[in-house]
Image (cartoon, rainbow, N blue to C red; front, side):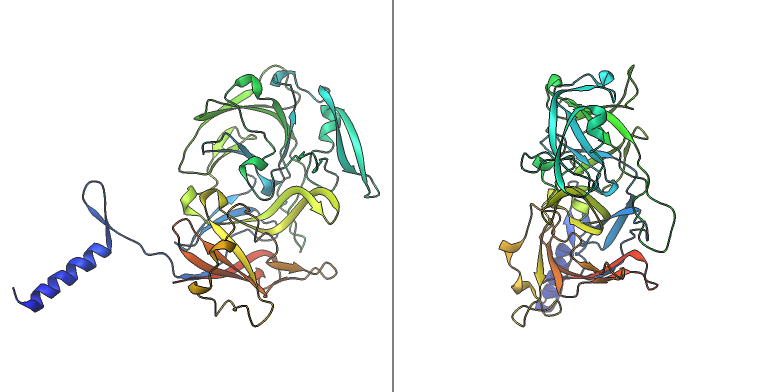
Length: 393
């Protein structure tokens, strides 16, 4: 064989090897390189921000699901946890020491009275003591008058950071008698009336009582309306490690396909987001629009860069060598949050903050830079975000 022919054969062999991966049966499949970037318009849904949108940067794809399609979701990892649908303003409170779901009604007396922080009608901090379920649920819905106690770690919402230990539901025990009944506020309807401005929070969807059991590999969810004292429904959900969470609709009584597989999304454009926390010095239930999260449960890291002077590289000039690994945040899903946009509350005008962008490291160790380029449609309607992103190589 001549040297030229040998070189050609080797070149073809190397090219084929580097463009394919070997399957278990010995066959080869092409390896798709990660997306180099582009412009994405998350399909949040317009004025009522009806959808949660999950974006996978490495494929440049998005999956949208109605944010009112589920209320709670079970965690598929080693811990036994339940998450609330923060995009629907779902909240929950544990009835300490009460395990019989059929015995719970609005008139049920709590095993111990609860003293909680609240706001009075003048918006001044105060405390309330509640002794019955009826009194407790007055402060359960997300809003400025929601009850809680941050100093004591009492919150009826999941934490905004999204860590496993920050759920409103305590860890679900494999010992059935350790699992108490919860009252779940089902959140708020998605409005259908376009009144020319942002309109995301409609009428209350009511309450249910819920008790969750587990054997470690599956969950059994018991649920009923508050006035049902004779029986309850059950849903069994087997853990599926392909997904971070498995969503459940209590109102429809079924498992729901909401999130993509855990490795197939990086950014969650939830549109609406709620949690109990501080606004200034006042603790209250807070709701945000245009809110963005990242997939911390699957190891996606992210940090914000604010351009304040010439010493900070602009989005255009930022390169892979500028990445600061120690700045990547893996334990707070709300780094982007609503901080990418600005609202003038006098005029209602909303605009993109042009002084910041974000660095993302996905689960496959691809690095991207990302910046928002729109928050409204061309006609000025909220709920039409757009972002630009680019791989760093």
